[in-house]
Amino acid sequence: ALMKPAYNHALMLTGNHEDALDMSQEAFIRAWKHRASVDATRPFFPWFYTLLRRLCLNSIRNNARRKDRPEVNQNEWLEPVENSNPHEITVQNELSGMVSKALGMLGIDDREIITLKDLQGYSYKEISEILSVPTGTVMSRLYTARQRFRAKMKEVGYETA
Image 1 (tube, one colour):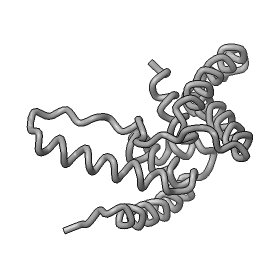
Image 2 (cartoon, one colour):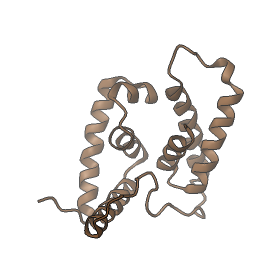
Image 3 (cartoon, helix red, strand yellow):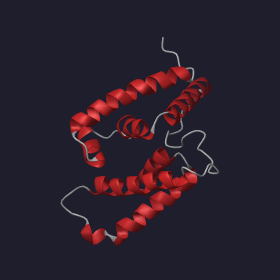
Image 4 (spheres, helix red, strand yellow):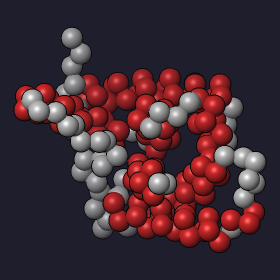
């Protein structure tokens, strides 16, 4: 049940399918090895996410010198649209492409907080636990990240009415 969300988080952080698979699997292996040290009174996912996030950030740092890893063209964490209307599907897919491109242009911190709140639906409190920062910091970072995201959406051709 946690494999897809873990992969999606890793993909969002690394932007690379292969790295996302490696890091999510490595996080599960490490979580299993350290299961005795997990505090059963606290939620599992924030602890697991911290582990996964650390692995991904280390991987990004280690791969920074290597440019041979293919980037994800259209981020797979955006769910495909299911609708019988071909026009709506085309419009939604075009919008998804713009969102993916704009997210990919953001820094990792902005991309992470927008994904956690707006795509994954975590509450401010949950994000605060996941990122180990106060709720006020989450709100402030999210506000700034959304402003930068709006600017990137305009850059990729999105126009509001």
